[in-house]
Length: 401
Image 1 (cartoon, one colour):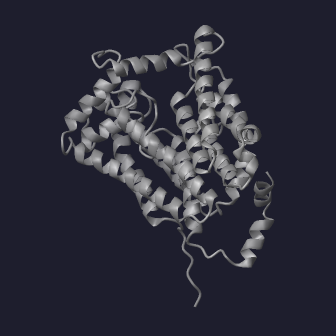
Image 2: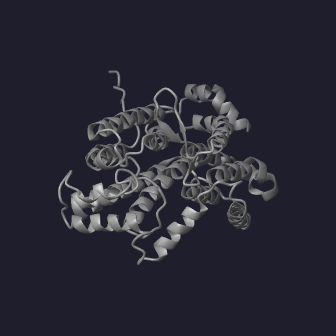
Image 3: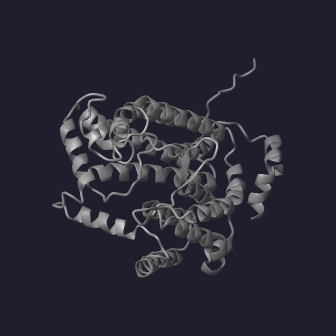
């Protein structure tokens, strides 16, 4: 009897957790989008809900398609895509978009669909996949500082510096994750600490140059400084306007919340459907709803660790951790900002916030993670499959570079 093929592969628990996050997101997005409609004057709540549905629908389509691809192919894809994303970052940085004199070069617009996407998130995925590939190779040259600068650290520094002017938090999380990956890959600690020092020095140098030549470097440094100062000064009600409204929303929610769609602070809290959506969730669904959401993210983190542990290759382990941990870190940074545990960063809540194509990048990352998980459930040890993989151009490229 012919065995029935599974349509959905990979970790079923992770699939369910991601589906629950996405389904739940429709309630707070629909509720909080009234701020965009009646305060900002953009669209209608149903229009924003439809846009959110379309973004998630295509995002899960990307996730499904990627999880069917053998994850070994991502080695060659990351090598080919790295120069392209660097060019995309250069193009994004050269647009010259300013908001109140600050650098706003985060997005580029997709011509046909009319959506904008943040090139830094795509570049982060490609760079982390590339670093995971390098650190999984048994090449002694990659573990010596002098011979690892060109293949490893030059792309890392280039991508991080191109992201830094417009998006400090993303650049910091990316550089931190690269350090974790190279550490897990066995890179010598003394060289790793040296590169950490180089990263801090270059960040400091950029800040000094941007302050000395503000016309040459339209930047967000003043914004960063103001956010940190406002965070440190809890008594500054004007500077902490967003945080104060978020805290009011959380306090109003109590144990069980006001009920779906009954938030009051969504009309007074800027970015209530994106950066501060967690505050609206707690206001409407209470401490119970907010805690349940945190537990759901912890479940996702647990499944990421399980998939990494079960992977039988170093590349699979590094790829899963490199792509999965930044998403969880982003989620908890967003929650920490709403709770005033962390300065305002602009990080959205993955798969929950109404942010357009940011959800696509999250789905791409999870599609690659599920590809690693799917490979654990497929019997791929036959000589025929091995021969086919070895003849694939992406496999050949990943082995030669």
